[in-house]
Every structure is written in structure tokens, then in C-alpha cells.
Length: 438
Image 1 (cartoon, one colour):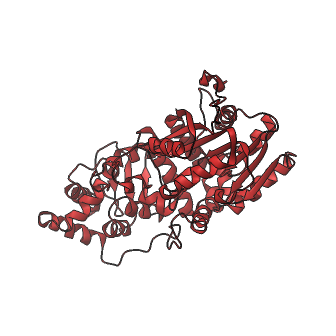
Image 2: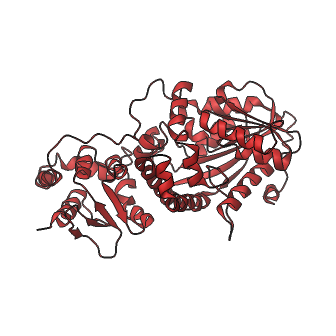
């Protein structure tokens, strides 16, 4: 008799101490759970072994990437319903509730029977090997140039053809700036233009774009504002793609792309520096050096636009709470770290910057991510062909879960405008700063 799903649901609720918010369909065809809810499809009992050996977010993610779990119905609703099991954290440890509860259940005499039954349901065997898309061994000192380059390569050298399917023609991999009726291309162009206006770019100004990606920011700044732009990246694939775009637009005399670490840039001063979605890779231990490096590269009166994802301060006394989630660290952004916006502002000020404006655009990133998921789903077969089934599944989960995180105010994103104010105190910032919105 088909019965795996009712058993699994009952055991999960006993171990978690809470009702399961999604429906379950098991490998034997049985179903259980709230009617009308999104369905978590467990294709193979190996998924349970993954969760038993690594309770919580990472075990669930491994099963998803391996294709042992699927979601039927609205993926955003499913992730939103499951969010409480992983995002309600103990302030003393920073760990998710499900990880704590499931691990504790294996030691709690009152729940050992349920745990034993779950083990029996999962079937005997060693823990399955992690999917090949997972980062395994990491060499070198955390956030050393060599290790940072390896982390960037894991994320950005997936393939330009794959990113074209996800990002669309703009090839901009950061939060867009939306208004009613805008397309993704409109919103990305609006974001790049907003940054150029905040930096007050004018013809001949030298712009350094740190983490330039596929060259969209430097191209926009040179084409629309006449800037002389330098873009730096650690990804060889991104650099090659950006250089071709620049050549195709006839802008090689005004735009240069380098494969270079920000710590190695020595050719200042610049009138402006943009850092768009790059600072998340820097790390808390290196952030002072990052801020000081950018400050030193600007001429007096020069401006920095730092566009960066921020985590809310779940536990201000525990630095571990600022690291990215286990799944993202293992599959998406190795060694990435997120800090509260207040921490970032303080570190920029310590480096000598005067912070003049902070614009929170959290909801804009949720809209952007949803559009990227739509692009991925619409061109799924090609995205898989240019990467792998597992890598495409990584990206769908990462982007959909991130959209929910932004919508729930778990994380945010901010544009921070800072100035290397000269000794005269003349910042050059307009009295009514919002005038740059156009």
C-alpha cells in the first residue's frame, strides 16, 4: 500500500514540532499534507538520507540540485511557506530552527522512535555524495587574492551563453531599477543611468568600475556620458565578452577591460568609482582594505557609488550571522559575506569617505530576480545545454529563494554614494540630492 507520504509528513511534523506547510508526494505515489498547498515531490528516498546526514538547508538543497526533490505549484509560495523552517534562527547560535530541531531529535529520548522510523524510511546506506556542482575543497587564506579568484571563477565562469539566457540582452547581473510598465532592459538601463548621474559623470572623466562583469556599466558610461572607463574583473570569460562588446561598439579608445584584483589597481586618480554587486565578495576581514583602496584611487572631490546587498543584523554580536546561507556558500557565492548597511557605512567613513546618500532598493531586486527566473524557465533546455541540469537547478533555487528573501525583508540592497571630500569641505553634491533621479 502506498503510504510513504503520510508517514513522512507525520514524522517531519513530530521532529520539527510544527505543521508541515507544504504538501508531500513520495516516490511511491502517495500524497499527504494541506490540500491546495504547493507540493514537495520526493522522487527518491536518497533525498531523506541527505537530510538525515545534513539536516536543514544544505541537505535539502543537495537533494534539489541532484533532482531528487521538485516543487509543483508556485515555487515562490512553496519557498515562502518553508522559510520559517530555515530562517527562524536561534539568536545564540545563528542556526535555522529545522537544523537545530532535527539534529536534536536524534539525541532526544522522547523523539528517538520517530527518528529511527525516519531512518528506516530513508533506507540504509552511506550519505550520498554531494552533487558535482557543489564547491568541495577550498585552498588558501580566506579572501586572499588567489582564493577570491577561484571563488569568482566558480560563479562567473559558468558560461557566457548560460548567462545570456538568464540575464537577457543587457547582461547586467545586479538589481535593476524599476518603474511601472518597464521591461527588464528598461530597468537595467535606468539603473546604469542613475549610477552615472549620482557619480556626476561628464565627458573625459575617468571611471573605474570594480567588478565590471560583462562590461555593461563601462559601456553605458562611455557611450552616454563620454567617460574614459576602466573595468576590472577576476573572470576571464567576462573580460573576453566585455572586450568584444566594446570593440563591436567602436569604443576601444575610451574603454579598457582588465583581469585584475582591486588591490592591484595603481593608476589613479579617478573622478569616479562604481562598485556594483561586487563588495559582497570582499569579506568582513578585508572590507577596510577595500574601502581604503577605493578612497586612495579617487581624486579629492571624487565620488564612489557602492551598490551592495545587505543582511539585516540578526545577531549583532555574532559575525557568523553575516555570512551567506549554507546553500549559497556551497553552490553559488563561495566565501561570500553580507553585512548590515550600517556596518558598511561605518567602514566607508573610517576609510575617509563622506557618505552623502543611501538609497534602499530592496523591492527592486525581488522584481529583478523574478524576471531572471522567468527567463531561465522560458529557455530551460538551452540553459541546461550550456551548463548542466544541476547547475540550472542551482540557479533556479538560488534566484527564487533570493527573491523571497528580499520580499520578506530578510536581506536588502542599497546604493551608497560617498565622496572623497577635499579639505575645503566642498563636496560638490547638489543641495537637493534627489535631483539626480531625472
